[in-house]
Amino acid sequence: MATSLLELLELVDKAKSQEERGELLKNNQTDHLENLLWYTFHPDVKFLLPKGKPPFNAGAEDPSSTMLYQQIRKLRYFVDGPGGEAFCVGRNINSVKRETMYIQMLEGVTPREAEFLVNIKAKDLGVKGLTYQLVVETFPHLLPPLQKEVLKEEPKEKKKQKKSSNI
Image (cartoon, rainbow, N blue to C red; front, side, top):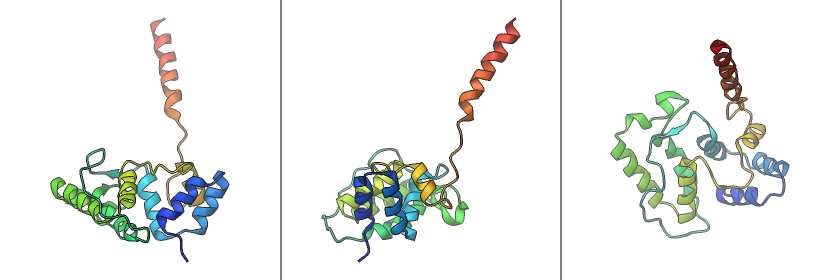
């Protein structure tokens, strides 16, 4: 029997090492999992929704619910980012309509599923050890490689230039 996304994320959270987490992700790879990780970790994906948790009334808890799979496909209506307007269609929707659609989506799933959807928007699933680096190592095609922080070196150079120009 296939592991649901919520069950998989719970297993990843409980894993003892990054290797074990990576293996769990690889062994349970699906388009839905990759989409969830892409929306959560891709640096160019921007949610066009207000920050924080919106007011909503979640549905009843159902351990066998699979509504999260269907909702992940709808996230494209709430973002701007790679893939252009054909994929990330959020900019084409009025902000009030977009926010209403998001609240309706959250109300159509279980409380646990709604929590994960809110966490995706916050770009932090709250899963121990599930990091950008792990996702890049596990699914190298999914995200751009991590950029070295060159910016930290630049201010030092500028400070040196300023000091030398003052002499």
